[in-house]
Image (tube, rainbow, N blue to C red):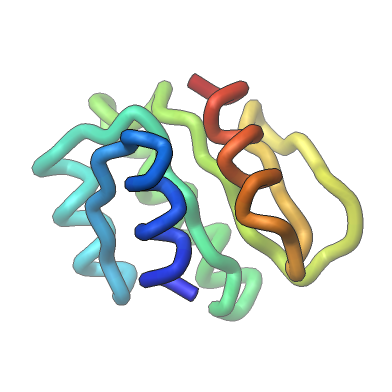
Length: 101
């Protein structure tokens, strides 16, 4: 899924930086200070919550919107972030990304 989403975002002229682990994601986010973070909840929910808490504890990332791709039902808004249920259409994710910026 990572490569597909990267390709779809790049087709819409987004610059994309990817990470496959929590540690790598935190390092990349701090290094690049992204405009938006898309986080896949393939981890245990507690791990995802911990990752979001870690991102929010870094001052330079506190205002960066997060879109959480989740197995839970419904498009949710939590703490100013958006949760998008799996499965989803990439164009829906792109639309949410544009709205979040």
